[in-house]
Image (cartoon, rainbow, N blue to C red; front, side, top):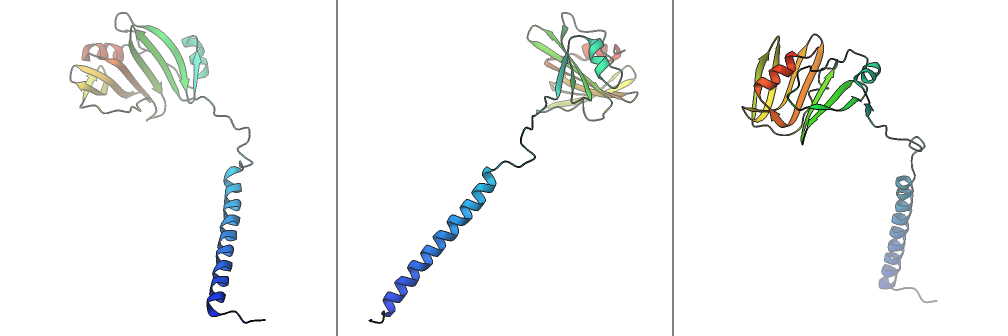
Amino acid sequence: MKEPTGLEVYFRSEKLLIVAVVLLLSSALLAFGSQVAEPSPNSSGVQVVNPVIQYDTLESLQGAADFLVQTPQALPTGYEVEEYALVAQTIAQVTYSCGEDKLVYRTSTEQEAPGEVSGEFPWESSLTCGASTVSVLGDQEDVILHASWQRDGMWYSLTSSEGLTAESLTALVTSIL
């Protein structure tokens, strides 16, 4: 048999190297691919629970909450209750509506819970409403879109889609019983 030349040895070893790399990559892809594709044993049958539970009445909401749910007694003219809800077992929420406007009232014993709000508000200030200092956010001074405050260990917030006046907000805040 004839001895292979240097060039033939080079091409054979290169082919073997390519075959080895392809096999290695294939094995790695199969190993990692099967790990990604297989669900973990703890995730089978897991359901995402809706954190918002709706109620028909204030009394039923009160029965589900672990705290006294106090609501505004002086709503702006035309607003009616649309929904009672308990959010994440810690926030009582009452949604009022008047036409297209929604007024969302939240209360909780947890400090940050009811006041969470997203969005950019070019105007922010504070108002004194009775015994409470209320942080307010809005597009401009006479259109309050979000308000939050604390009183007697409870945290409160009001969010309006159309905006409230300072007078309306003061009436709402001071009427919470």
